[in-house]
Image (tube, rainbow, N blue to C red):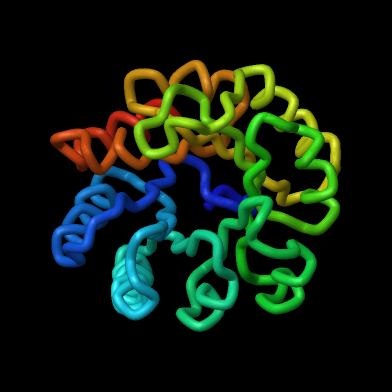
Length: 216
């Protein structure tokens, strides 16, 4: 992790809806070998029991690979698994409550969609990254609000102006691939989150390596 940031710079993988945990672990390992720095476990369709089993294995493999592990939506699950942090959307609970429960060492990220104004109270509540998207049309969330490069620029100004060091990071998500991530990084994103663009790319390690190279 960059000493100037509270969340790792670079490629942030987000898991696809795969039931096959062995396949997922293999894919995460390939992405890590290509330079992925953080991974969010995100499952919307699994049963709580199956989800717990998979999430535990994912957090364990991230620990082994030295990849930062984030749990989507559920800070209680993140705490139970001793993951490195949690990602919260606007309906996933109170940021201050999550911080109190998880303590100062865990990472909390939040969705700001296409609304930089949402980042202001989130940063005041102590989040470690603010995420904007969807940057491009997304197969995973086709109805998602569209964010722009200007939103990334505004988010970057907000985190820089808070004077806290290490500072919160700016994350971009939604329809991002190694081919279209360049302008987003140029606009000020510290990290790009990929689901399909990484895990459905055909060559996961190569896609990760290409993303990493954009930050080098």
